[in-house]
Length: 320
Image (tube, rainbow, N blue to C red; front, side, top):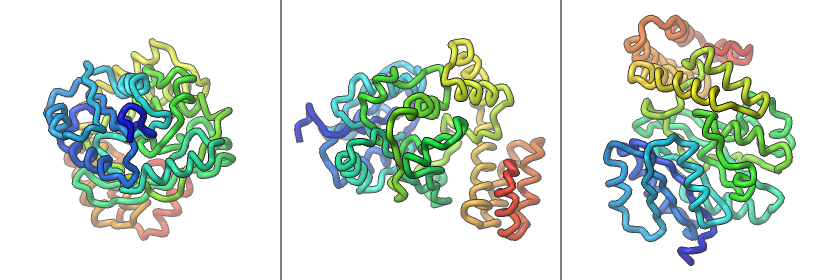
């Protein structure tokens, strides 16, 4: 391997990820495909994230320190500094399966007409316990092209893409706060071929510290701006500022922890029917946010047989 010309850049933004980042890094270093650089952008962490990263001595790791600017800005820094043609996205709290890079590299080099390749993912809780497998909403390029603008086609940390395609679009839009990936796909996939592999290639860790929270816990104004900008494919600085202000008001333990436990409850009802685990999680959410009526609805639904819960979900009752 030429450290100055790796075949893949694994791009990992990190912010206050001390609890999980060592496991994430190890999962990359243990890849069966070894010709990569692991480019970590430490986005102004105030915990021990930087110290943990520096404790690894593998020559394939490059650490860039910057002041806190958000995920999109960290990714744009990484795109500018990455050495490889192909970029594999990865988050600092997730886990790569050993064959992840090999499978995606083999596919995209054997099928050069594709520019973005994602996959399914296994979701785990903050302690690493399996919750469910998330399969992409579309696999074939034809299916992806038919998706409505409000449906995100990829699990972001599973994707491997050609760097030039992202750079030609101007990188990630830093105004699209918390949905910079979805906004990117809306703008590039109209004339770029993409697909999702059906095999889970990573573990995505749900945890209360994540920047992203369950959509149902967002304010109505946040959702209006988000889906309005996705529909037009454009976003203003003023809209970006408003999204960030709304999000920062919600980044308090009461909301983030409540959203985490409620989301786990939903997944244990709809995706991996285990009502006792679902009730344990929703009772935690109720204890944190006792005034949210939707939590009590989830608690009541958890006593229904699986077939009825599935039927409710298919009827698009989004509270499930």
